[in-house]
Image (tube, rainbow, N blue to C red; front, side, top):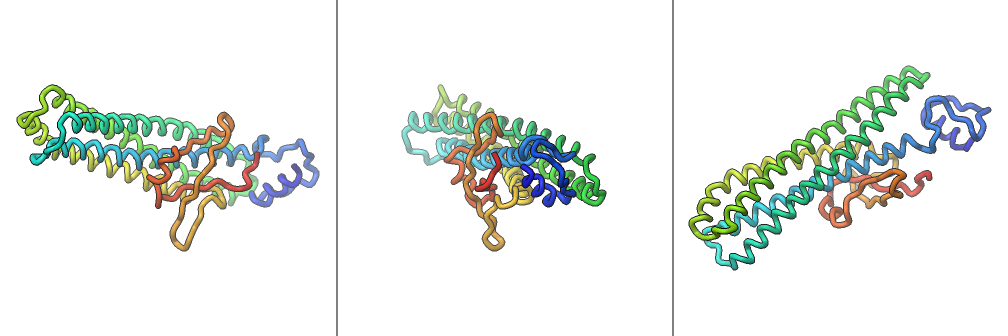
Length: 271
């Protein structure tokens, strides 16, 4: 424990208290082991989750629109019953993905508030004016990057639900009237839906870019694998439920975010 106090003192630029006992706490530092860094690591996991869900949301939205375009094409020659069933399946998958995107936003916001509230409180514990000022600047910058993710993701989620509602209406229109005349009516709306989807994808791309920026600048030391100028991702392992409540993308999302930097789990995480 004393050795950990020494390490923390060196890392934070604080004077080491030679007389600190194993049960003592350095003023300004959490009494829990690496409690602050656990919060930061959890926040990184939340960002990764939003990032992965955004990538999948873009794919699901494009697939749903693509299927509607397929069944509305003038040269459609497939099985109408099977094609309509697939259209419903794509729209349902898109709706479920929108829900997952929305469910990833609230935990990010909650965890971010925990991190930034604790960080703000710790500023008062600095004795070194220069370090306190620099920490304050970095806090503002980090909060701004996190707010950019939240703002972009929230706007994308709203746009996504609106698109899914419109896609569902078009499928409903065809449910009892899937013929050349009704398809012609739907076809007239495809340009509008395409524009909606393009706008949504732009918002989702912005969310992914904001998440990438946050991860690249805020990942814990040693959590990013860098090869030259390229930042490569490495898999993260989820911690015990209830301890850090780390969110991570499902296994099938790792392929979806290939090429987008994510933090990797450290080999020496404190327990």
